Length: 455
Image (cartoon, rainbow, N blue to C red; front, side, top):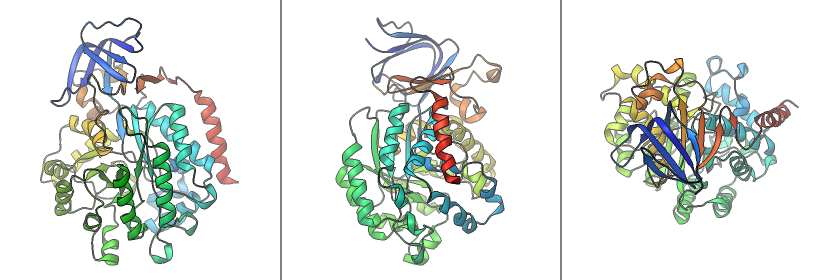
């Protein structure tokens, strides 16, 4: 057989259908793209054997909201939110975005994907809504190329903006598309790349950027296309735009989208921090999911999303890293910790108790799979995708923490890269190096592409 046998695992976080639990001192065997068995004293002729003594093995993290292209505007003092109003910041940031070339989109995607993989992310959905005219229409194609190179399971969110600044959006004209352009390229990308089969490495999400920056017809046609093609829908909701949309249309965002059908089990929204309790009830009733992005709260200073209320109502929850415009890293594992700690900070202001630390790990795994409409990723069990990461806990960092693997990431936090990341049965990161690419070459190429922004 072809597979990997992880022997003598100190702990494996599994879910056999009754919620996440920890198995101690067991083996885990993969075969091809899937997990074949988890249990004691496993053997398999021909499998690669890894001594997993001291290792905690977790299901791969699923990132449901990001903007990879923004990695090229990280850590810039001139774009510091604390020194600028939102309007001033947008006036500075969008001209930079509009100068990005096709190569910039490719290398910024590689940069974000690499950091995600290093920190245990095995599936990522990127919301790529920036399409400067000079950069052309092959930006999603280049992202799939980057994902193939690194071995990442990739869901491409084909975003776009159609409403001009003169009619109330924040988007420069050079980044605008017509509705026909946007829908046509969504259809092209779906027909070219979307693979609905089990263990698929390539899928497409129809993801107009946000209702306040798109014509209503753009949103309506997005729904029609996604339902026709059987793909997931996504957009930004509830991050300060609801009063603007209400002034323009007479409806806040959740009602506006629900009325046009942009809601349901095949739909999830990013952020949702400004939604009322009644709006959260509507999300739960329609089955619409949420990608909670905790780290932008630090920079943007927006209110802390009421995760306990969402949990109590049964809203489907997942986690996203978000883009570097509001989070300067691409580390979803760190976001699990941030999400839990922020809710603890706000606990005294909440009607409902903070979910358990383990629940936040669940958001980043099973919750992410649910948001993306998948039942083959998100937890470890025989027959599931062999997407996992391993942490060798035989270090001083973990003394006193090893009794509770489920709470380790959300409660304690992990700052270092994984010891191993496996995606679809392939080890893509091990012992501080990518297994199929030279990171120094990737770094040099990305730096050269980044430098073109200053030309």
